[in-house]
Image (cartoon, rainbow, N blue to C red; front, side, top):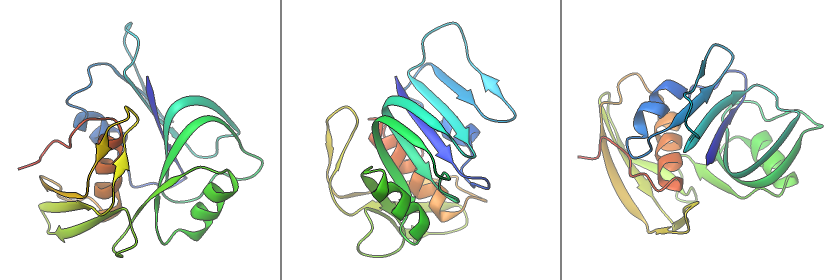
Length: 175
């Protein structure tokens, strides 16, 4: 099972949209303040939103730090890789202190994930350096043309794409 934890009070990342994007995974459980969605089968993917986790004990996990990083003390035990905005210094500091490797998303040449094109209804997400997936595959630098991303902020598009790639699930909407 792969866990995806979105941390922060006002994250723009939609768990519903992310859940719909996982076309290659069958069982997805979703937990947030408003919804618990699961079935009787063990999950392939666990999607969870936490405003401030005190303790997490998970393996094969993706931690998305969009707005506020968890407040100390916060105990993260297990295997994590993080996705964070490159201009989010508090989030980057938190991840550095926790010794969690991070994939940065933003518009600079130093970011791992960026947008090479962004319009009101489509985007091209660019992987600028190799990424090792949770399944051990290497994603080489490449571009992913996406469609149907109206009313979605750029970070959410980049983070969703990074999550799907880390989970060995090519982004849906690739033209």
